[in-house]
Length: 165
Image (cartoon, rainbow, N blue to C red):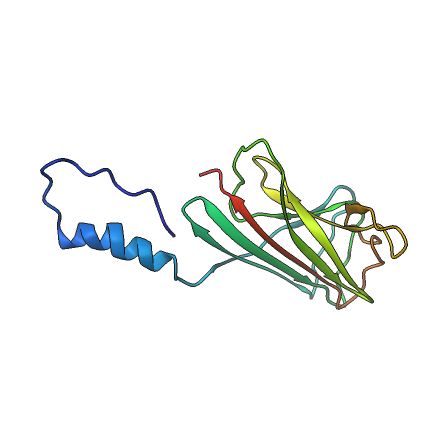
C-alpha cells in the first residue's frame, strides 16, 4: 500500500534503495493485488451468523483512498438475526463530517439495487434498499427488508471512501 512520501533534505545523497522505496515501491503498490479481509456482519438486534455461508471482503488502499468490496452469500445454516445490518470496514473512514454513498445489491428471490452509507469516522457500513416492491423509499436492509432472506441470498457492497489515516 502507498504511504506518505519522505521529506528530502538539501544536499542528501540519494541511494538506489531510497529511490526504490520512494518511487518504484509506491508506484508498484498502485498495481498490486487487492488485500483480502473478513468483514464482521452485525445487526442492531439479534446477531446474524454466517454458518456455512461465505462472507468475504477485499480492498485497495492508495494513499488515503480506500476501495472496498464486501460479498455475503447465505448458506443453508446461515441465520439472519433481526435488526438493521452493518458490515465492518477494513480501514476506519475519515472524520470528514459527511456520509459517503456507495452501491449495494441484494440477490434473493428478486434483484434489489440500493445504496450504502459510510458515516464520518466510521468502522462500519450499512446497506439501504427499497422498503418493498411497492414502496421505493430506502431503509436499512434487515432479515425481512426488502424481502425475507433465505439460503443463497447475496448481499454485495462496493464503496470508495477516504481513510482516517
